[in-house]
Length: 584
Image 1: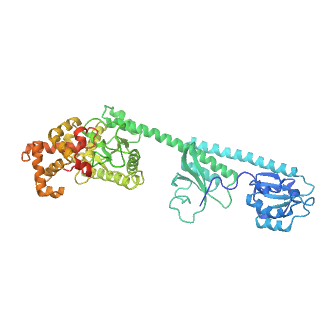
Image 2 (image 1 turned 90 degrees about the vertical axis):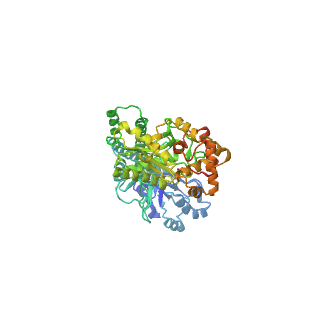
Image 3 (image 1 turned 180 degrees about the vertical axis):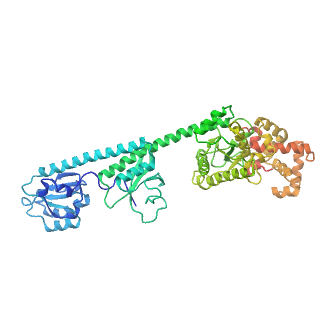
């Protein structure tokens, strides 16, 4: 149970306090003495019989009974109505228009804990109103001064570099009760008592005590709530002001932290882009920048690139965004990794997953969004057995984290995401090379026949020779050896390229090819005959088979790349219709 701000209560003195003033000491409490703790915010004189319709909360009402002399029956509903509206009390001056206060009104006052006062005949209303309003004014002035003092104290703490926990402790000490900060989703960001349970924290035990929450916001930016335990009585005026000013100061601190994080994020992205671009850089200067950002790159490190693994380059699945207009990649085979980009929302989720996993290692995460995916640098050497296992474990942990948390609940279906891992960079001058290799490994992961979505560049075989070739040269090579087959598949919705890939994969074993492609033995035999007729390839010629095999590898590396166009972009009709990936 939580009471949202502002709580019931607020500025004013209690009726009991007011009755200690001169000349209010002369007033007699006829009934409802249990309600003398009601706050008094103003004093008013009853002038109309339907005063209940106009009464304000905290109003002390005075009357001679003049308005009820002709309608004494209306007195029967007066006390319950005033009590329900939250009036502070009712003072009656009897004898002139009301000979005596009726017994039923005394009973009602006690029942509703609503103070019913008798005003001496000789005392004027002005003598009551003046002292009470003066006391309220003095109290409000003292409250303002006290709350201003609290604000100065908290601002001094901020200037001294206090964090959220220190600000919580300061507010808690002023209030005399625990204080904590919640984000908009109810997660605790800071507390006055580390490790202590708080009633608003997720997972709190049932039966938790009520809390008071004040919004923490600056302009249109909402950060969450400053919370404290609610006592049996509403917060006093100074307590309420303290909580409110504390929320305002904490909002400034959170805004400052957010601004600092944004600036750091900008510098990190710029520096990471510089490292990965391959442009010449001064090693000493680069190391100094890395140290300033908290990045430990003075030791061997390896690039891992996370991105979508897309089986069909023609129709991107939900969650993949167009590639235009962001982080243009260099032309070349390595661009295959960026042919399909994660939508911004998914990319941010993947980046958060990577940062979370890397932060758990105790170091400042070296991670950023680039070329439609996410790149991280880890201080491991995958050329050693232990280093390889460590890098593989980290990459799979990021993918699991994204799949189980960041990917779930985001709009659209999440595409399959994989990872490519480059070779070790011994220093910062080799970081760009490791990054390019990781992108190539990610591109190859999309074509892996065993469904593996984490691949090391060192394991790619012929891909390692192809990845440095310009994309245009790879496309020409593919068209030279596979162009006629691609055209035929496109026009006739055939599966000749897929059959050729299976022929190479199974060493010409037609039974295995037929079983793999769910086709009749004679159908495969016919297709192989058509392949030789259309392409001029001789399937018994080792040189022809080598060229065809390399061309298929190049086609897979280019699949989905912006460099693919024209005759390569269409693919086979069967592949387009069934979303089948070309497997080698």
